[in-house]
Length: 232
Image (cartoon, rainbow, N blue to C red):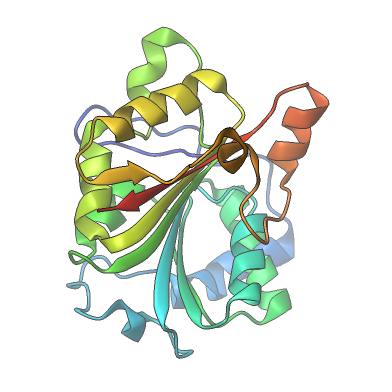
C-alpha cells in the first residue's frame, strides 16, 4: 500500500497526488461522498472518537496510506463494530476506496485525503486502538531513508494516540525497511515487539486479505514480514 505523506518535522514529502484521469463516477464520488466522510480537522477532535461514526462502534482503528483500499474495506466489512479512519492523499486511491464504500454500504469509515501527521496531531491522547502501516513507500535509496514514515518523531505520535495495550502493525516486503522498523521500535520505550518466534513475523495477520502489492512482491521473489508492536 502506498504511503505518501508530509512530515512537518522534516520536509514536504508528498509523492504524486494524482495519476490517470478519474472516471466520471469516481469524480462524482469524490465530489459528493468524500465530503460526508472527510474528517474536519479545523474543529477540535471529539474526546470520544466513537462519536465520529454514524454506526455504533466499540473500537477505533487508523490505517495510514491505504492505497487502493483493499485491506481497509475488507476489515471494515469484516468488523462493523470497529470504526476505521483511513488516510491517503493520492486522489486515485481515494476514489477507489470511496467507490468500494458506496458498493459495500460501509458505515464505519471516516477519511482524510492529506497528510497523515495532520490526523495524528489532531487526535486526542490514548484514543486509538490499532494503527496499520502496510506496505509503505520504502524509499529504497539510502539518501532517501529519512523520508520513511517510521521515524522517532512519528513513533512519538503513535505512542501519544495509541491506548496502552493498543497495537501498531507494519507490513513490508523490503528487508531494509523491516530492519529499520524493528530497530526504531526497539529503541522506542513505548513499543514492544510481540513476536515469540520467526514464524510469528512471517505469518500474515489473521483474516489478512492479500493485496496487489503483496502479489507483486511474491511474483518478484520477495517475502513479506508482518510486524506487530504493542503500546506499553
